[in-house]
Image (cartoon, rainbow, N blue to C red; front, side, top):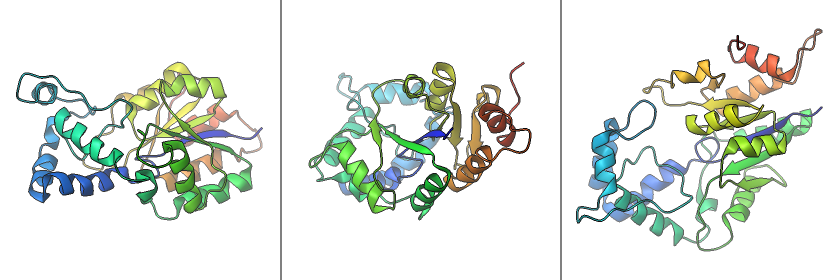
Length: 254
């Protein structure tokens, strides 16, 4: 049976963060962007805001509480207040077909993914949590972007709820994401294996990842190598779950 695999887009395949840094510089100036980046210690090792950071984000300085726009991905490099983040997203949403302007994080990896998926007859779906912008829908922009990078006829699902429940409903085998909380959703709400793409060498991988059976890789290229091995069992032909656990260096639950 063909593997059914979901890949997150932003942070896994598409370089959203660096494009947002560029637009933040347009709005706030280079000095402002540099100051925002220096505030990174305000986020703890689990990606959560510290009390001081949370308090700053909740108020615009005039007693008003503001939150980022709905259905927007979290920003990691730009540790902004909610008011600043809202202004940045309003700017992004005014850009014609913004999602088609992004670059690959790993140049050529989408073309490789397409080739490997075709060779192994994998069924691939792409998850994303992208707000709408001027132009085509975020789904259509994402499809065009993937096609431009070498993946023909991509299936894109704009996520609104738990990725785990979606994985369960679609009967997925593996979900690849760059956010620990999304991987946690997958392992809790589905039978799929979650693989976390963790490129940040300066920040420790969440300690709960291994305990919860979440595999960790440093790149999509490495992830593809593991998926190929998962799909190429030896003579004993253990199940998909067993092969995934072994190749990701995870222990079977007691």
